[in-house]
Length: 267
Length: 304
Image (cartoon, rainbow over all chains, first blue to last red):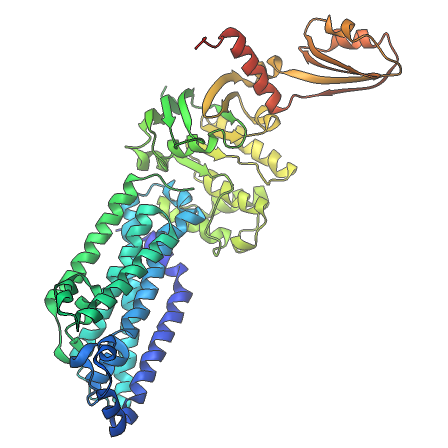
């Protein structure tokens, strides 16, 4: 398999990847380092327990909102929003710039005048996005495990990896959605806007579904519910939900190829 | 022999303007063909359709005997392309870009890249983002010429190049043609097209309104002649000369358009005291006007 475009993309994003890897790892390390003082503060735990329900839903719901355990703490502080959000921002920016951004700059004119199929270009760019995302997830997971050892976090590795995987999958789905909108419309800002709307909308649906029963069936259309709705950091791998996110990602890559092969390249 | 480019009724509509309409064109191998027209006439559209970057709304286009859309990848193996005001990967150096594009083609040749860069006098070791427009254009020319393609599609290739480099470019184009390979270039400058091309197609508002050998085009085109005399003269005497038209007298100055040689005009003027004489090649617009007037008289508009 030829991989020149994949290599070009990762090379072009190497500084941004490094910055994101350091940023996310530092944020996660900070959250983990603070854990012992949270655990030892009974007052704080009680104060959080007395939060109104609506506020708790924002940070992963009643089940996850338990600062008495490291799982509950990590769920509220990282996996209910901040960690998947950071990965998704990276993925959306990457997905929008790699195709639509290059089209707007005009460089795709050059690349597509070379003997490469458009479908191959889209696939390699999608793979570059997923490889970059996986890199960020691996670096931040290793950081959390190492810092966790140092502060006796007491968090099972499998559940931690499950939670990270959920976040990476929701980022993959929203990032490839940005890729798809970019492939379809050729506009970087449209791609960012649409994908950000899906992420935020999905998050709100998940939060509201926690205390509005009528919204409950809607949770399955929320990428954030699929990623973290079952609190994987406590309950382990939700395979059906993760499979759904994986399928959505794969379908979006195929759809991106299809729409990009069929339309005029912008100038 | 298979034509390098053959289009029949090729049309690309974009709602309002900027498209091409019903273009029938054959460019033979070994030809240097100039696609001449003002900005926005459809030159870029034509080249991008031939490259399958955009798709025709009607008609057909064969490039090197292959279908422009269905066989795009096979065509691209044998084509070199320079876009108008080309966008490149700015963070790379020229050398890195050419090396990467060589890998993308599956046939990089670093020594050929260096030789071409030396010829065009461009520094391949600096990041493209710090290069001047002219030097970026040179990098774009290097990547298009380096693999010795059968067909070069060049969109305004000399914009930003200084005159010395333009000469080098002309040499390179002539060498390609001497090899039996083909060059299709667009331009809005008649002098450039006259310099390098064998044949010229004139495009206006998306329509190919004339295709001519460069020599014929020049003969058909008039020159704008201005003669300043020491005293007023009779303009009607000039207007009566063969090949002279559009005579305007302003004080001591007579302006006119001359078709063919200037011998009769100069001899008539010499009977008076000539202060100054300026003979200018026609502007592109004037040549277009010439074609329009001609087509208008040959093909009068229907009354409807």
